Length: 390
Ligand SMILES: COc1cc([C@H]2SCC(=O)N2Cc2ccccc2)c(Br)cc1O
Image (tube, rainbow, N blue to C red; front, side, top):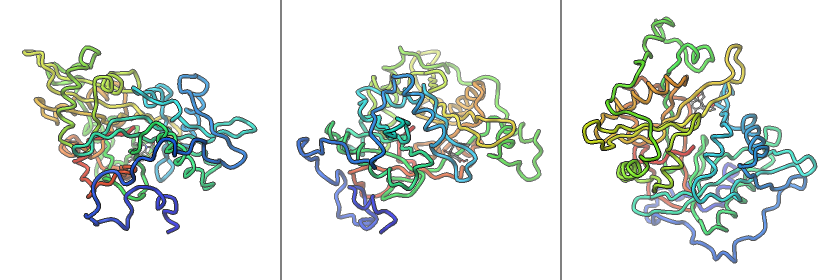
C-alpha cells in the first residue's frame, strides 16, 4: 500500500506475516556474497552529493550538531526538539570498531551545505540465544526544507549498502512512528526534578487542587544519596561492571552482548554525556549494583524564560543487593544534584517496578523498536527488552 511503499520492499516483518507462526525466528534473507553487494553509492537527486562525516573533525562535527539541533525530532506539539551535544555525538558514533563510512551526510553540491544525515554503529546484540552482529541505525535527519522529497528511503538504502559491505546483515533502530513491524513498543515516563520549570515551559501542568509550593514539595528529594558504598564508576571498575551487567542482561530476550571494551566506552562517566554509579559493599568491596543515565538536553522552542531543558535518560541499571527502588531513587538524587530538570525512563527491563513508586508520570510518546532482516516469532513485552538505543 502507499502507506509503506518503501518498507514493503525491505526484509522486515511484514504486517501480512503477523501471526504466521510457521515462519522461523531469525534472519529473513541470507547474506549475499560481498562481490554482489552494490559497490557504488545509490543515486541522489542531481543537486545533492554523499559526504562521509568525520566526527573527529571539529567543523564537521559542528555542522552535524547544527543540522540536528535545527531539524531533528520534535514532540507532536513542536514545543521541544532534541539538542544532542557535540561531545554526545562523538561518544554515540565512535564506539569500539566503528566505521567512519557509516556516518553519512548529504550535501548540496553547489554550496556544500549539510542537509541530511544518517548513521550506523556496530553492535553485538543477543536475540534470545543468538548473538548477532548488527548495525544500530540512528540520527536519520532531513532538513525541514527538504522533507517529502523521498530522501529518507535512499539514505536508508545507502547506509544498508555500506553496512552490507562490512558483512553485517542485521540492524536495530527505533522510531516514534509505526513501521513494519515493531519488536516491541515502549513508553517514556518522566520524573520531575524541577517542577516549577517544567510547568513554566508547558511540559507539566499543575495538578488539580495543587499549589506550586505543594507541587515542589511533592517532588522534593534528599540532598544526598542514601545507599552505603554508592559512588561514581571508575576505569578500575570495568571488569566488575562488565560481569555484573552481562549477568543481569542475560535475562532479557534482546540485549547488548557487552564486553569490557564496550563497557569502558558506553558506561565510563563522561562529563555532560553519560554518568554511571555503582554500589561497592563497604564490608566485602564487592560491586553489587549499578545505575547509569545519559544527558540529552532539549531545545525549548518558544518560551520567554528558558531555552534549554536539561534531561537525564535512564540507561542501564543492575540491582542485585540494593532494592531497585532505592538504587533509582539515588540516581534521581544525583541527577537533581547535577541540575537536571527531568529524569526520563522507558518502561523496559525492570523499570516498571519503580516508575509509579518514584513519581514518574507517563509521557505521550511511544517508542517502537525494530530489527532489520531478523524475524521474531512474536513481539516482545517491553519488560523483555534489555536494549536502550540513544
Ligand atoms: C513532550 O513530551 C515528550 C517529548 C519527548 C522528546 S520529543 C522531542 C524532545 O525534545 N523530547 C525530549 C523531551 C522533551 C520534553 C520533556 C521530556 C523529554 C519524549 Br522522548 C517524551 C515525551 O513525553
